[in-house]
Image 1 (cartoon, rainbow, N blue to C red):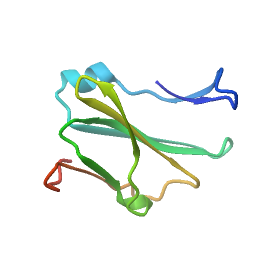
Image 2 (cartoon, rainbow, N blue to C red):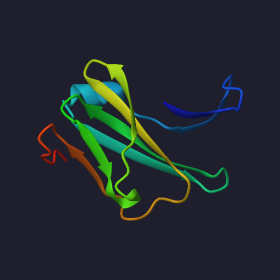
Image 3 (cartoon, one colour):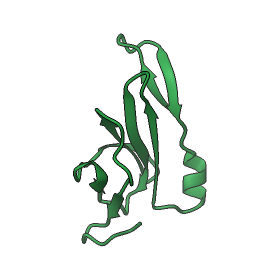
Length: 104
């Protein structure tokens, strides 16, 4: 579950997305992503999962930005990029291996 916390970081303000970690692992997936926007709350975020095989994620549609990554275990990383404005369409995300080869 991906959530927005209150300013004191004590309560969940809003659930903004779900990621099926077990489904990702069971499918042997390498890379997955989601996006969510809420103009009324001024929240725009791209997020997903990546296996250890993915060494670099480049979000080309957002100026070749690289997201934050958090290791969650079992060879899987959670990645996310908060945006200040609506997502630029089409969304283009590249997952690369250690040699720069495209994986997705």
